[in-house]
Image 1 (cartoon, rainbow, N blue to C red):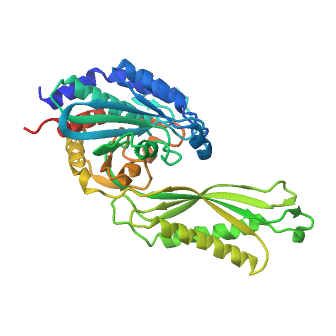
Image 2: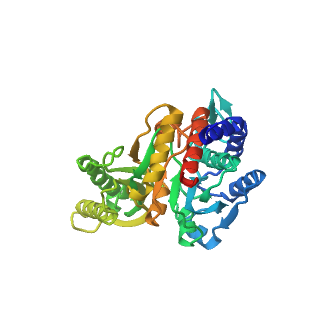
Image 3: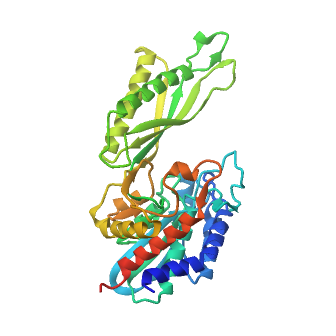
Length: 415
């Protein structure tokens, strides 16, 4: 048997264990908010120890968590050193996830398997790649081959809030310095770039009044509507801006949350809304933010007709830069494409993605990155962030084989 055939055979023989591992990970909730994710890290470390993998636990201090709005984070690093002379390859997946919401036909933390699919929040994004990466490394080490370099498993818990206390914490505190990064993704494409994201909270202040005498107040909701109309108009302009990265189209803006007012018979004195602006790799984040602030200010001024009226406060919640294509990731990309085609029986293209990921933080630290892991062709197909999120088990198995083969290519001595 070739080394590749041995890797595939080991993964096939241990696949039931991989599924059970993923089920155990899904069954510990990591809803963010509230973001009490340290218990999941403890459970993951316990499961890894059973495989002979010792996980370093890097707890984020309380002062950083309080400012950030999360309850607990313990990030994990598993270091697997081999021989001298090769690269250190980090494999990163995140355990935190948005709350499950309603409409599930399978328990959101059940890990139930039905029809060849494993269901549960984070089963696709991205606890599935805790399993993919762990079992790929186990398969690699089952060869007892002479290898160069090292593998690090980075299991982190802050992707939903932007990653600054996940991979960002590990990198800023010099707890890791890999040569290459593979981050959680989907099996039918290798992602080499992705959008950036700017999130902002806008508070519109007016003056409350009795609804029977509205002229004695200043309607913050009407002012917010004027601002929202101006912001939504930007989407018509954004469609004229096209990215050159395959898989990424144009910028866009979404208002995902709005709240305000005190009662039906009261003129609203305050309205708060939160916006999400996706930035293509070619855009300058500082210019994007300045433009949005200007659009809001101009709309407020127009509503006030130059006189007293609404007052607006703007707070930046998140600035996630885009992941730019990096030439240094080519050996990783080539191996993933080559083995993806062999294992899946079809061409595996490179592309960009319209979402943002923790991979950008490694890119900003100068670590060439690619995104690949267990999952379907699109985010939509997986139901990620929707009811009945799931991973197809055959995709999990084959993605594990692709990653194991890729690691062998990059770490085995030449010749």
